[in-house]
Length: 131
Image (tube, rainbow, N blue to C red; front, side, top):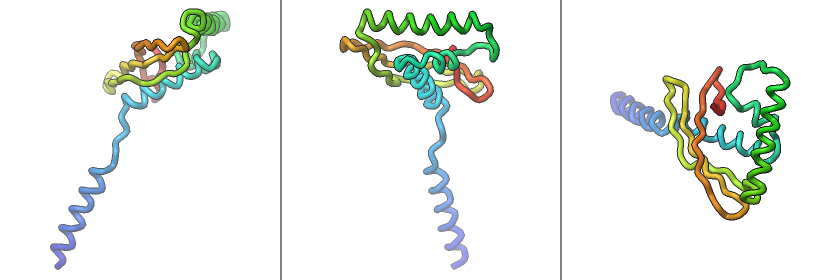
């Protein structure tokens, strides 16, 4: 009876541990890239620029230039496609040893066109950044 109890406990332990879903680094990188682009399309240029892979401290003039570039990009998208209305993840894969990921986002524009863009990501200090 005791052997049967240990066998059942062993089977249940294996079943429960195999059911636990592991966190996929590619999925985390993809959702992070999507979030950065959501910041961009909602006009939160500060948050978008903070998501760029850059040194922790940059000159104020350089940061202003990055913010201006983000704003000009969105103005261009507004003129050409009536803006970006939605961002979704098309595909992603990650190389955890090199701490890089390849994310493909699908941009849905206001003029009903869609475009897939490649977004390279890099992990630094446990956080995914746009490269």
